Length: 138
Figure 1 (cartoon, rainbow, N blue to C red):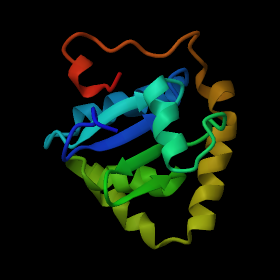
Figure 2: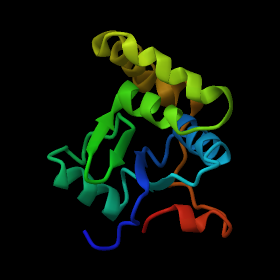
Figure 3: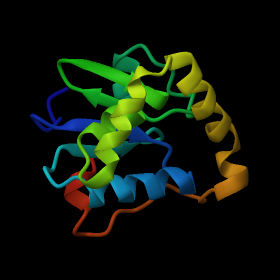
Figure 4: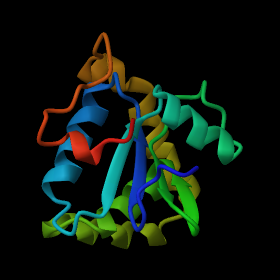
């Protein structure tokens, strides 16, 4: 894929989930090193990136973090790998990587399965403000 930014990690998220959109806003605020770019799982580029990694684009229940040329991470591992790059106390969350992935993903899945009920859902994907537009892939 030619139009991916170099030296940037890509975060794919559920674009209609209020909790997910709030998390993306928090990541942007604490991404002081400008490490991340974003795309919704529902977008064409999101679907293409999922397919390239053998993931089903119809399964919109996980955050995905792609470190191009290195690896991709899903669910709790993705969230903790993202926190590693964030400023403030968020970087301390990476310390939870020592917990078994099954345990972490169990908690993650419980929240993911209830996210619309607890936090609501948008009718369409978030549209970034003009100043944030450069952080989102088309």
